Image (cartoon, rainbow, N blue to C red):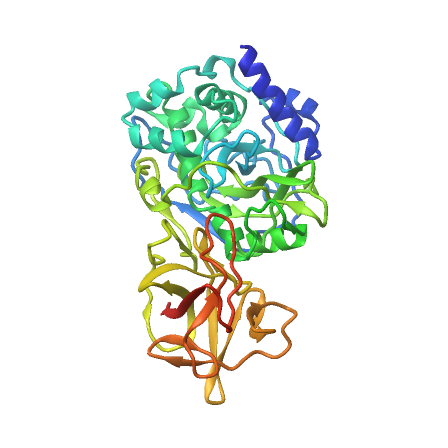
Length: 457
């Protein structure tokens, strides 16, 4: 219980730091009338996580919801709280970046939880002591969810090493407050199956939110020296979810938490998660000088880790992202594209010693352990120009750079699918980057020579 109390204290401290009074947790599910929101706050589209109603279930069957309403958008009281999440209508998928002590893979954020906030940013907590299960591992195993458990053992980590206690805390504090996970919302309910749906859905949602990769694609990578602006971090994450904002958490000026906000059309088990903005400003990061400190430890191959989580409680559909995760320094970026002429969109793969070793990211630097940026090649004169999400690309002072500081893009040419500048396909770096290091790419001779190959998307 002392450990659980410590976890509770840490969680409440995080909520307090992000502008939410922990005293709000004293509210209970007795207030079953959902909060009303202005008609002006209609859904604006954007990224959605679609969890089909035809998905397989564990034991019983969640209630079938016909034409359900979007949570936090009702203008009259909704009585069927098995098809409408209330009062916790805004669902937050929250993520940690723990560096002291380092927790989880060095190339991935980890899961904090799935929180049902009220539509005004307040929240209930610990809503059903009778369902505050204390044997999460055994519950998952009893339903045959060993793949889910294996995934949680990698990505849903407690910074003190007490994973089981952390999972029990997240379920008891937040899962029991999700109205659509009530046992009465199942036909032929099997005891504890709603907890399995909670953990499965949290993992499913987390897998559509690769924070590390999205940040890296924008040139925002862990570093002991670099700092970033809040605007840049928010733009990098928002660009992948329809422009909707997230909540950022910082401790002593270092980024360590991200909250993704959703409204839900239907139940958590089978409904549609619709990206939305936070209700009010909750971020605790400064506008500039934000540190994003590296983790110690080893990276993980995300393709194999994702494969270990079998989605048996929901069928997952999401927008395909124009990014590619590098799983090792010798592996080519995964993707459906093929080498070809420079036109349209593609990746800039780096080849050294005859093997692909990373790629060029959006700032124009070489990176071997993150996510490839998508570049756009546009015909110009006898060649083409390149641009990334940061801006135009050019050779400036003998180095490749992309960004808003570039006023005139360099016209490159191609030779056999490789990038060429002034007739040469050979570029240089002072060394091969590793970990979170980025290497500047030069046109003049340095210790390491490289070729930049186009991978058409």
